[in-house]
Image (cartoon, rainbow, N blue to C red):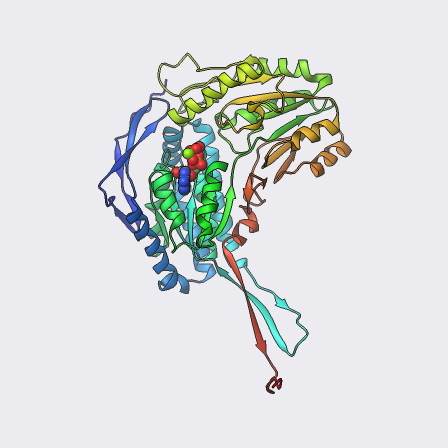
Length: 493
Ligand code: ADP
Ligand code: MG
């Protein structure tokens, strides 16, 4: 067991207009450590009135504050300062992240490096946004200005808490937007620590606000607020649909990164060791709480039986344990709610398919939301465990006969976030890449994600792209300026 001392139970307020403020209702909600089930913090619940205050602060900062006068270079420098703070405090933030969401500490450290890199990337990109001169056939100059879209409401999930905050905040700040961020109610702590440094980094009051609370209350109030220009959401498809409907009333811009049921496709000629490893990594990393999890493992019939056996043997050695232990490879699920959801799918899976390993609670632990890594095989692609996002350590292995069938099964899903294909045959690899409808297709790997390259879904996995220049685009409007150079009257009438 971990020997690290327990931190004191802090109470966090909301961060509005550069101040830490209590909830207007006076209410707080508890935040848990999913490995001990103990309360580790209390957080002020933001009411609709608190959300209104935050949006008004963001509105004022955008419309009339000093923020509009900052140069792109100023904004870039602020982002670098935030990144520096993150790098200086990586150990504290990684530990807090692990305590709050249950991910292994080593994975939290990788996340923290990505968080800092994301702020640095957009810090560097801020002053590289340029317009165009348009070759209109007139005695005129036509050019474009890129301008910030305005107040952005940013609602994020609990699986990569601070990284999701970075993906939202960094491009918005670079673009010159102002933000109201709502972390997931399960995992608000690292974002609140981050907010401690905003003023010192140079963000004027109101430019970034952080409000906490339940999605249906705080999140819904934020999405409905007429002072918001754009909603950026990462979370479930069900909530994505609610958000689009609510945002329609005031025609807010919306970008969505939703769920998936991503195929991880293994051909018989794939490198064996790498393939078995990649099948497990694709679906079990971060306890399977990953929107791009390779939760449908498609395996060519020629190697199917041996492949399921090899995955199973290797899965037996995955070390579950307290997430602060450095050799832990899988921690508990984030919450009781998520544990109940995943274990209910395990019961469904046991009826729909055969169980190679797992299928229940990890019994070695008295407390904590630990679930065994689970492999179901002989799964029909029509089964619920092949169609619905489980968001836990559950692999559904599906056999296929040939390339055409692999492609057909891969695309037979409402989602289109990610896919991977494993083969040594480059012709086959690229045919599959071209045929799968998904926002990212990995070849002979699964999951690596870099801030330089785009991220987002096809089909019901959402719309819009994050990361890279694409992520910045979503926070920019395009204004055309037309300058007449001909002094004569138009002369039409
Ligand atoms: P999960 O079911 O795994 O918690 P959600 O999609 O519900 O995933 O949550 C992702 C984020 O969306 C969280 O920050 C949550 O509070 C927020 N959320 C949930 N419901 C709503 C809603 N109706 N309106 C706005 N935000 C919501
Ligand atoms: Mg929810």
